[in-house]
Amino acid sequence: MVERGPVALAGSGEFLDVMTPVDAALLDGRPRRAVVLPTAAAQEGDTRIAYWLELGCRHFEAMGVEPVPLDVRTRGDADDPATAALVEGAGLVYLSGGDPHHLSGTLRGTALLTAIRAAWESGTALGGCSAGAMALTSGAPEDLLPPGRTPAAHPSGGGPPDRRPAGGGTPNGLGLIGGLAVIPHYDQMERWRPGVLARFSAWQPRATTLVGIEERTALVGAAGGWEVRGAGAVWVIGPGGRQRFGNGAEVPLGAPAP
Image 1: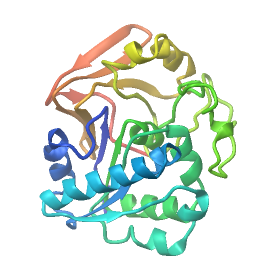
Image 2: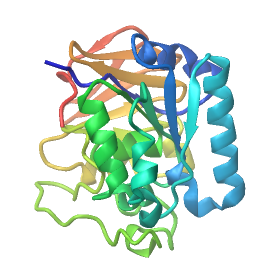
Image 3: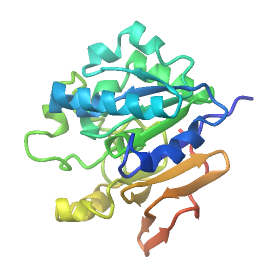
Image 4: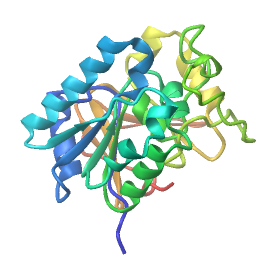
């Protein structure tokens, strides 16, 4: 039976040298072909999309990996069968940073997301950094971003987030990786937006574990479980407090599962 591919949830640093060892491990034994998906930055304009596409392409080319840049900004883009077909044969699909709500609203229920899920279940690796890490899991609090950038205001055509009953907040991510809610930039987030860590804890959906991932750090999961890789730490946050796990440590979260 084919196993699902490994997963990397990064706190920051996508397409930078600090993440090269993580990406190399994700691609180990897989096709040297990486999909670069900067959809989360679509609302920041052409310049930012071009920046992420160029950075991602340079990063993977330097690793001897063929980049597959996908300029997907709208649900129409994500539902294009020709675009979705480009995922086939990739060893890695990588979702970079920006707005997690726009990313989830744009991909949810589209041909591209169907292709990404099918590829992952057939062994392709998944990577998500910052917004990408949140979207691959449970999402984020609706008030994470400044006023005017709430999920319902996004012009993605995705509409507001799902309103499924939950014991805590409403999950609004893509849910490819079940059971987790992610706080990226964990060592910087509170400084940027005071009170945001409490909002994450209040929002945390039912039956999830809340994890904080520091900058330049990834939580990497495979069939054997989860491990920390990078310069910082991963924190597991629960009612009894926080547990810190440094580089190389196994994190008791169970194997990645949908």
